[in-house]
Amino acid sequence: MAIFVVQPSPPLIGEIEIGSSKNAVLPLIAASLLTGETMRIDRPPALSDVEMLCQVVESCGGRVWKEQDQLCIEAAELVSPTVEDAMRRMRASVLVMGPLLARTGRARVALPGGCAIGQRPIDLHLKGMSALGAQVTLHQGAVELSGTLRGAVVYLDTPSVGATENVMMAATLAKGATRIENAAKEPEIIDLANCLTMMGAHISGAGSSTIVVDGVEALQGTHYLPITDRIEAGTMACAAAITGGNLLLRGARADHLRALLFKLHESGVEVMDYPGGLRIRGRVHEPMEIRTMAYPGFPTDLQAPMMVLACTTPGTSVFMETVFENRYMHAGELRRMGANIRVEDRMAVVEGATALEGARVQCTDLRAGAALLLAGLAAHGETVVEDLPGHIDRGYEHVETKLRNVGALIERVEHPNASV
Ligand code: UD1
Image 1 (cartoon, protein in one colour):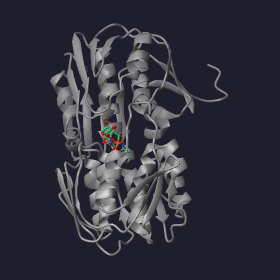
Image 2: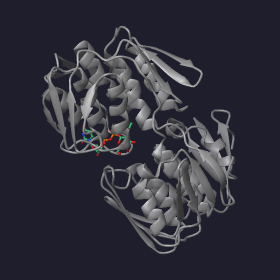
Image 3: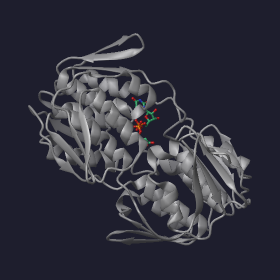
């Protein structure tokens, strides 16, 4: 829960160390429930989403502790296979459903309500578990799942990241082979498959649209270093381009960010790919056309930061959001800063190069919050970004410190003592 005060900032210059990927680490934490042995995750990011999922693991009977720069989890015995309350607070807690069901034969999850960026149902997760043989019943607003899992063909109507991860985890301990068709291809899926393989699972095809999992009797603990966060890296790349800066993003991987880097390059930004990271230099000169899609398409999580770039670039930019149905809430806040953005259903049209003016704006979700911080760097006057729900800390570790170290003028004022 914080308030960020952002002043117009000079071009950002220097190096930013990109942390471990939130979206890779969350399924790894859930996967730790698949074994009674110790799981060690190296370099866990300091994020509230990670802390919250660790609490869910503890509520299921797991033990969680830190050793130097390692997050250690041991779920020798699972006592309470329920994630009902946690689901109401955090959608990613649905990821423990597959592991709980596979290991204990039982799980109970709440049906999530509509969330800020769209409906985000879990029907594909449930269809997957049902195809694997689970009985799925609705009881007092929660879904109860039970049964012994058997391999099956699971077709996902849409390549859902979470559903692919959940089914893949559940299938590791199912009897026989499972084929997931129309699977998500995100780098985080490959990372999870790599970790599960080190735990003893038999998985092939991760990163393609067909994943095959041959079930095994049991999995063992392992020690795993997750991939770096492509969305944090992409957000920082946008920050460099918005200020016309020169940033080396240490640990950022070009192979995970092709769609963004192509768009930045096309719009006039210099992108250099080094073995240890990426350098982003210069400004955007050309308007852009962005269509968000499942990987390897343009990531929906970078649509909001990219829209801030479009606001600062001459010409008309067009955005098409195809993944989530309500992901333009930052547009309203950017308009309060003087941006010229017209939203119609899934399309947003940005007339760029209108001077942004500092204002008091509200974070509506995680990536929208990051976009508002970036807008503050480029605006005239002071911008106050109110993040009372703590969205930004869910997905960006020490964001103000990382930005300040490269020249941004940004302060965090903790709430409730904040009196800005
Ligand atoms: C993950 C990421 C999130 C990212 C999103 C899309 C994590 C923790 N979060 O979220 O940052 O924005 O992928 O890249 O990894 N859907 C259904 N039924 C389902 C599941 C999903 O209709 O059962 C729909 C969703 O409403 C959405 C689309 O499928 O429209 C994609 O969602 P999904 O890939 O599942 O996103 P998450 O895994 O929740």
